[in-house]
Length: 139
Image (cartoon, rainbow, N blue to C red):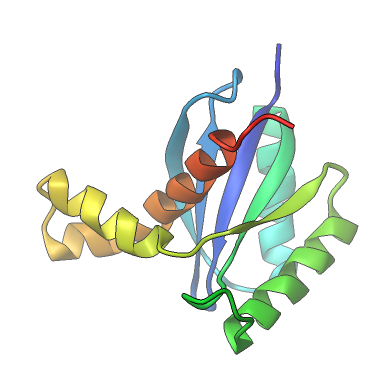
């Protein structure tokens, strides 16, 4: 059986989390964690790795619309590199351009109010990132 993959939509205040199914076909929003510091995030991720037998973690990389690196990109890359050292499974960066906008559209299409969507958008954005990764062309 193939292992699940998690995706993280890293933000200064919140981190959206999504999980794949064991066959790595479906991406589902899982949780929104308050970003209370790196150690706390690693502890939550270690628990997720153990409880869901994760084989890989994807971190959304926020590039500008034209693919340029921004201050948020640099902050997320620091998080990604620290995470690679802190966990025992592969951690991969993945372009997350438009993931939050797509997540807002999906939640709107589901009929959620702005307040409901606000609470779920980070996890939905993580699932958009994960779905993009799962749908990538085979190597």
